[in-house]
Image 1 (cartoon, rainbow, N blue to C red):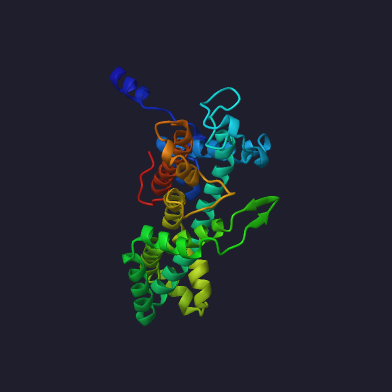
Image 2 (cartoon, rainbow, N blue to C red; image 1 turned 120 degrees about the horizontal axis):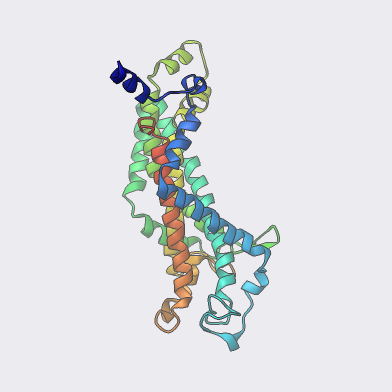
Amino acid sequence: MSDTTEALSAIPQFAADELEAPPLSLRQLAWRRFRRHKMALFGAVMLALLFVYCFGGALWVSEDYANYTDTKARLQAPSVSHPFGTDTVGRDILARTIYGGQISLIIGLTAMLVELVIGVLIGALSGYYGGWLDSILMRFTEAVFVIPQLFLLIVMAKFFGGKVPNLTLLGRTFSGSVVVVILIIGATSWVYLARIVRAEFISLKEREFILAARAIGTPARQIIFGHILPNSIAPIIVSATLSVAAAILSESYISFLGMGVQAPTATWGNMLEGAMNYIEEAPWFWIFPGTLIVLTVLSINFLGDGLRDALDPRSRVV
């Protein structure tokens, strides 16, 4: 009897509210999975800090100071007055990375939005309607896919560069090349997303709830955007997150080659282009913008990996 009593006492006791706890919602399940992804949390925190650095730093550092030239202070090493040093014309690199980071992040986010519009639209139409429309859209997608993106970026940036006037927005003057770079990157990065959306639509359009919606006469537009697209949002979010990092890298590539965003607008990419001839003489000139690019891209990739695991319905909750 004593052995039975001891065995029963070893069984953990649960409170009534624990036994009757309601099931977790999809949002709660996703958040629980995301919290257990340590690198994704690191990426989210680091990305938040980078946004605070770039956009919050503008509250203490003016754009005029970031563009102020002082040839007497050219190529100064990091010091108290210039924590990140100065560039070839004496501009403060710390201030330049703040305002350059704003443009790099804006390019990444807006290029992602352009990519989302094109990729989701083509993938949705192709996957839902199929037939000859699917054949035409997929052949067009494959044609864009086989063209090397970097080559296309360079050619289009060279052709359109300098043809768009400078823009003034919210008191800031932006080089017209910013718009050109955003449109070019967005218009050449949608191929993978279109294929993902097409596959999701092909899989979902034969489900019972879609067949039921068709049977009661629901318009195709409402089925596409009100039923199928919301159920395809998880891979779209992950792809969109990773495309921000890819857009920032693409901008850095072409700006480093001198064909991206032009003066007076600074980006991390064209700051590296200016440091190309001073790699050994002034390493601080490229270390700081280069480090910010690496941290941003890694943080976004970690965040994308975490979102992929969190939004996967087959992932186990432990």
